[in-house]
Image 1 (cartoon, helix red, strand yellow):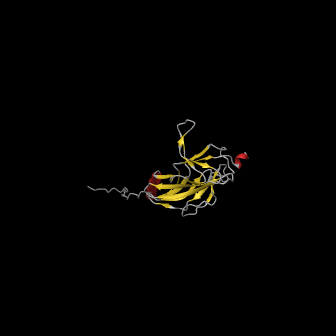
Image 2 (image 1 turned 60 degrees about the vertical axis):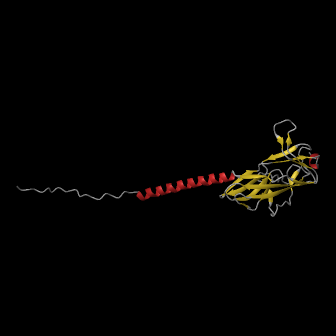
Image 3 (image 1 turned 180 degrees about the vertical axis):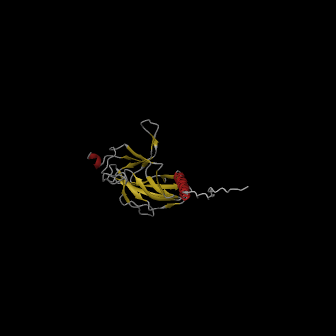
Length: 233
């Protein structure tokens, strides 16, 4: 029997084409991994710096040291409210007072002090207590200037440069605020109490992030008698 060969063209198996776009797919995977790492790293940085800041305490270091006047101790409010009056400097002519502020680093991170903002004690303030222009801090000579809220051209607040002082974990740093009587101001004419809670505010950096924390104390004074500033009102 004669066999007739099949002359129809035979399909020749071909190698499968290499998948296209694989380099781009890997690129997006790598980019996704890097983005996730950045998010996780940023979250850790934020959480760690916030946790460290929560362990920082700003407070007055002892009593106010005054010459030419006295400091009234904290006392119940004579008006009968549940709040106590804070310790108050009696603001009278010729007085000078030093408020020493300490920064206690209770965290496990190193802090770098940047500046402190002391509200309502600038030379253009309307109160009867102001910071001395020649103010210096023990062992340092910080510069002072208008605070961040002084947009009117008047120096109402004072910003104190803390000269990048380092506060190691568990350590404490102090700086002083020198105050004097300001006769051009008027704080009620006499007998009234002027107070600022969370005074001063201290800005520092931890893990490269700048944070601001108010003091745990209240700065307060009571005007003693009228001043030239009151008489002009």
